[in-house]
Length: 123
Image 1 (cartoon, helix red, strand yellow):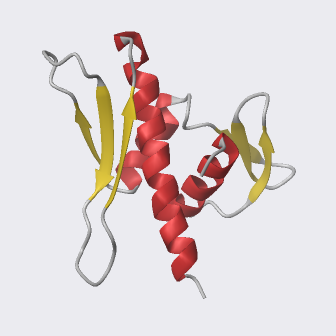
Image 2 (cartoon, one colour; image 1 turned 180 degrees about the vertical axis):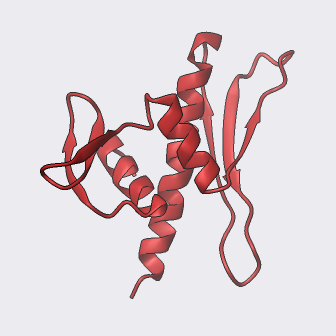
């Protein structure tokens, strides 16, 4: 997955949001719903949307040790043997002020990987 649009569409699929109207590049979000009533969904920049995504998919969030100079956030979901594969995505960043954005991106990347697995299993 290389673009934010692909990440968002697969993450929305994992969340069960199948009524995607369009991707708005200028806002980096999806319009979800129908033409008369839609929501702008932007978990890459909206902490509430990212938290809802992470909680709904039951993701674990891990942060680096505060004493470590290597800053990262890891979002993951444990696998269940013969049912689902484990998924884990790490987002690294340089400046501590970017931790919240790295957390949102790690959640969306993990959700997108879950969505990708779900699509592959759909006949």
